[in-house]
Image 1: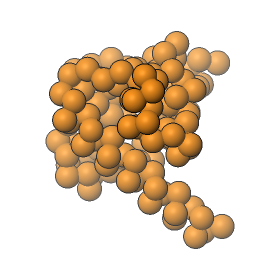
Image 2 (image 1 turned 90 degrees about the vertical axis):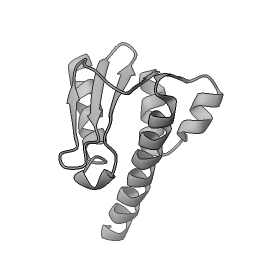
Image 3 (image 1 turned 30 degrees about the vertical axis):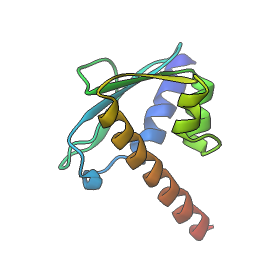
Length: 116
């Protein structure tokens, strides 16, 4: 079950990542009890994969917090202020990546709403 939940998390995150990011960095998201996602925001080949690896910044959070962020029920800054996620590494890079992913999520939700 844990592997399925992590694969679902990776698939959700992959919808947000694309070559148009304009960022050249890698973000590791450690989802407590499930594992880690590496989010590569390379300008020419953005992708998400399950596993460990070198990254510019690391976000650690609980599965419930990850779900709330992905659904838009909580924004990253609120989660950070409430102590629901921890950041290590290059915090400026993390904020840039988080902002990009949040903007992509808002755009994706709008596209889905138009389609329905």
